[in-house]
Figure 1 (cartoon, rainbow, N blue to C red):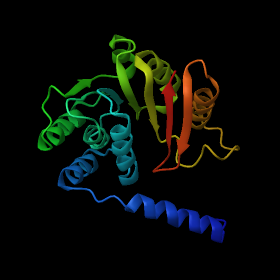
Figure 2 (cartoon, one colour):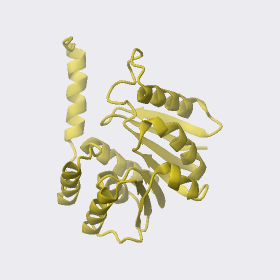
Figure 3 (cartoon, rainbow, N blue to C red):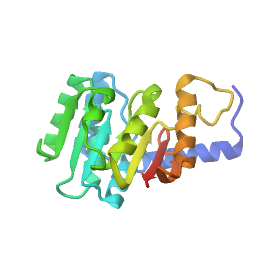
Figure 4 (cartoon, rainbow, N blue to C red):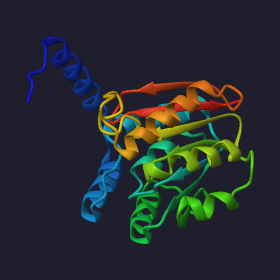
Length: 218
């Protein structure tokens, strides 16, 4: 393996420092423990912190999450959102959703504000109302990302935000020689969010965790 240059080493150290900065409490740690028990890889500490920040800054009242897991990302979003915000979270893994429900209850969120649906995006998203949501977080099959983003554009209100997790595909996206299907899909969706100004007002890519791709609806 080729050795990292001093500049690359410094960038990695900065990334690692930022990832280690958040201090998580017992409920988030419980969600991470349940994730490990179920064989689920949750969003990183840095990513969870950014999700909370984005929700606090944008103040969404209605949110959709694709990929409930054991509740790490959903809890991060709810903690940033204003009081009374409602999260609709989709995941085909009913056992994971039961774990997420325990996490939300432990943090004081009633079931009326955390709507967990055991199902896939292709089945559930078309049933959600158009222009009814302020934020969509996507942490699901990357091969279905184009479909999920198209549906996100449909359900988001003007000014609403889409957030895509693992947008760098574990550092494969920046490497042109990598042509894996998931990597190609992420590149193409990233270009669409950047270039299709008839649908997306602005877009940015953050290196937090394994990458977060963000865009706001026209």
